[in-house]
Image (cartoon, rainbow, N blue to C red; front, side, top):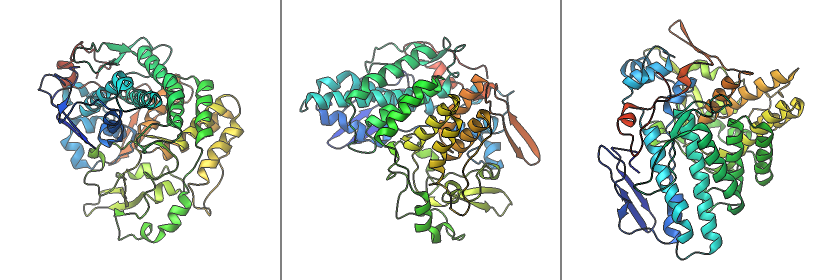
Length: 475
């Protein structure tokens, strides 16, 4: 279990405090000790209620996508951010990476907790057999979510010609001495599929909290994984199964009208809302925030976005209007600034994602008119009525491209669209070329660029734990 170094993890839970410490050369030298060792069902269930065990660090992905604005000063002071933000393919990101290590470390810290639940959940005290099975099933969903997050960060895109490539360490035990061989993409995806299919029958329809995986979350994550693998028929079935449980859509038109005065007040920034449209969103299958580094100091969950990115939203799109507003600094730096205090569901699963997965799969099956109607059902809750128009297309290709573009606006600043772009680029039918212009210079991210894979940091390569790690990208 010696995968992560330089981490001090303190998890404070109701009735349970576990403290995990590590030296600068390894992660956990022993199973966490604290006030008591977890034994009861409630002890383990407390891990699921702790939001600190479900943080996703995807900041560098957002810079690459152009979803997160960085000022010239920041770009000049952080080499890694500059390389990803400006698509600098000639820069060796491994050598300059001294900051982007928590994506890896946090993933395997989370994995420890989920492995502990999966391994010991059936032995917990003070529980029924059904509770134990549910606990283990929820741990499996969370482990699959975490593997999907990290394999789509530090490894190549899964496809027929890449599935035998090395990807991320396969850790399936909380034991200190457990091996952690670097698995192939096929092995990692097989584990995710196995976890999800075995978990779904035992998941509850309603979660104890928004952090507890539900049956809809299980089907939703299965749809996401199958989509990543290009298994579109199966992804469609999984998405429809999720929507059969929860197809609710949040009414952003009502939210806008209820908060219109504050949203349109150009003198007011980042003020708290009386209604939290993210954590209390009926679309949520499961809620995961991003790391606090995303929104700490933002006074809210809406990160800044570049002007060019804001221009990709259609007029009247509340997904832009209710989150950001144009801003210019005294020095003349322009960007869009967040306007309400909130922590979005950056890393969770929502019903809206299932609509978009369903739509893409319908279009690929030749039902592209039905696919557009599936997306339009979502869009009608996202636009001011006076601006709204249905998406239309003249053929399958146009339909799929419009579905993906609208999905990018629905899931701006999340890893969801990053995974989609990687898949589309690898498939080659609907590739994505990204461009941005800064100070008159246009930068281009090619579909086949190596920048779509984030390299392992030097710290990880130098401290691989129980098994060596091979770098997955050249630069």
